[in-house]
Image 1 (tube, protein in one colour):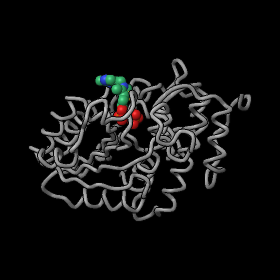
Image 2 (image 1 turned 180 degrees about the vertical axis):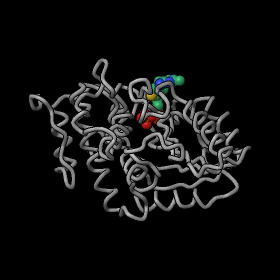
Image 3 (image 1 turned 180 degrees about the horizontal axis):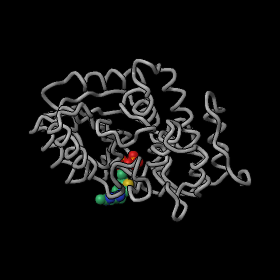
Image 4 (image 1 turned 45 degrees about the vertical axis):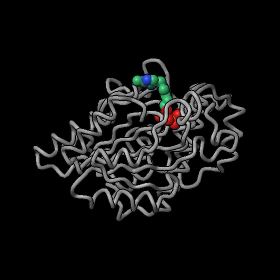
Length: 291
Ligand SMILES: Cc1ncc(C[n+]2csc(CCOP(=O)(O)OP(=O)(O)O)c2C)c(N)n1
């Protein structure tokens, strides 16, 4: 079982790199998807699955496992890549993203992946409520399990999320850590123009959360933020992770148009060239090659 003490920041960066390649290739196989947020979350996925979470693909139902809830389910291509690269299923399955009746639906579906998806997601705003429930249960069981929830900054516009924030803060759910991927963009453009979420850190603090603000692509800073969360004993921690939509692919970076949509193989190949070749991992196989 990987842990923060056995996995180096460089290992996490290598995994993030492969997650980006997997995101681009799997979405190209599917023909469409949500590359922008998935590329932006690569370091967070890599860090959680290879360095931070107590989890074991050989024993996925261990009651004491840490839980990950991808509340912004649309960026699941990054989540699926992290799962595959940590041993939950063969990476070659990533080529089946969004296929009818496949495991890897366009948004995480627990019915299709009962061992690896803690809860289905897609309708935004619900994941933290699920984490709170898991956190209360762990508290009752005296379990050391920690809950990690991933949301987007546009998702912060959902009302249910604020109710859940209030609950976690009020009940001092210190075993909950919330990652907010703050890329300032969402499906319809700039978050600030669609519906302001600022001043976000002040609002979270007012709801009795500890707030850490970091560069979401800086693995050392992310690891330090998680450490702060673990050491905070009187409130849950929100990590505002400053990310770049489409990170690593110049034509996608900082463009809301890449929140979601079609990705051709020509576009994918340009993206893969910009990302650079696979390093410590092998790209998954694609039956019949690329189109
Ligand atoms: C309850 C709900 N309302 C609306 C949507 C449609 N929707 C999908 S993604 C999205 C924007 C999310 O923005 P953000 O969380 O910033 O994600 P990013 O664009 O960074 O991937 C919206 C409004 C939804 N999935 N669920």
